[in-house]
Structures are given as structure tokens and as C-alpha cells.
Image (tube, rainbow, N blue to C red):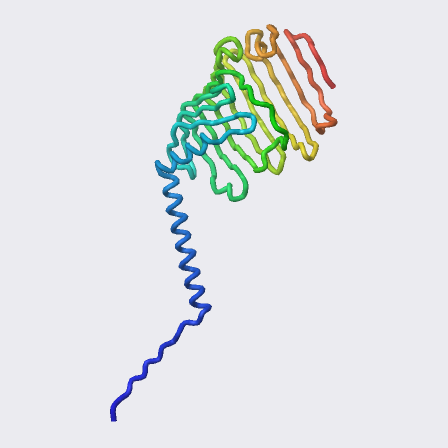
Length: 260
């Protein structure tokens, strides 16, 4: 009697096959995404981003140009040859700006920048933009700048009559339509200014604190058109329609104006 071999084949159930195929698809998508990240963070990818930045222009005519991107765009980045333009041309430049940010925050509609530092920024002239076309005052996405530091801030002759140099430090947060800004300016020839703003237009919030002092030949005096030492203090809180605060302007240590 001949022996007979029986082979039993078990067919995989369709749920198991579907799960395995979905897993393979997800893995392939992750691999493609990883490949895209690598390409984007390469020299050709950086060039692509630079070209995209050059194609952006706001309704008021603001444009930004970047010559080159070094480092990783997904962490610590160096922007080389930065120029900022208005409809008349370049008004602000920097040879290098260091940027430490979290790009994945864009998934949550959030521009999160831990640090912006520049060894040198030059303001050649006061910009002149086209009139706005209405719309919201603040952007529709959140912005957080943990630290802003400009080691050498140069102000051109066209701004205040002669060349000046100083530094700028600050921080800013725009969250859900609320702007909280803290900026400090210090110039070598004596001008000092501190601005603290907490504003939320849609909620009718407006809190402001300003302290500005400058010598008779300083930038503040030149911009205001007076040739006397300036001491300005503004403080107060309230709303855009009903702000409660005080302001006092001293010129050569004499009261030139008060507001309550």
C-alpha cells in the first residue's frame, strides 16, 4: 500500500493580511518622509528654501532675501547674507543670523524660536511700506521668540543724521491673538529705551510701558526733531477704547507734556 502525503495549507485571514499590508504602507511612508527630510536639509534643499523665501512678499511690500543657509534647518540654523526690503529697496541687513528653533511646532500652527542672535545688524534707513489692506492686526498663527539678541546694532546716517551703534535685546510671544513684547535698545551715545507691551485687540486689552532717555545729540532727539535731552515715561493698563495710564515727557529736565 503506497503512503500518501497530505499537505495542509492555512490561508491567512483577511484582517491579518490587511494589518500587515497597512504596516508595510506606514513604514514606506515613514521612509519616504525621512528621505524628504534628508533632501530638504541638504544643500539643494536649502537652496529650495532660499528661493521660496525670496518669493514671499507681504501686502505692505515687506520682503526678505537670504543668500545661504548653513547648519540644519531642523534645529540650529545660520542664515547668511540677510536683507530686508520695503518697496523702495533694502533697509536692513545682517551678514549672519543664528536661529535655534523647533520646526515641528508648525504642525500645531506655532512658530517657536528659542533664540535669534546676530553679531551685526544694520538699519540703513527708516522703512516705508505700502498702506495695509485691512484685516487682523496680529497673525493667525502663534509666535514665540524666547530670546532676541543683536550684539552690534548699527543705525545709518539716513535715520538720525549720523552713524550710531548699540545693541538690542528682547523677547516676544503672540498666542491666540495676544501679543506680549519686551524690547530693550541701548546705544553707545546714551540713548536707552525699554518697551513692554501686552495687547490683545480682539479682547480689547492694551497694557503699555515705555521708558526712553536720550541726550540732546542722540537718536531719539534727532527722530523727534528736538535738540534737547529727552526723558519719556509711559505706563498704564486698560483697553484700546479706554486706556488708563500716565505719560510724561521731559525736555532738558523740564516738563514738556503730561497725559493722564
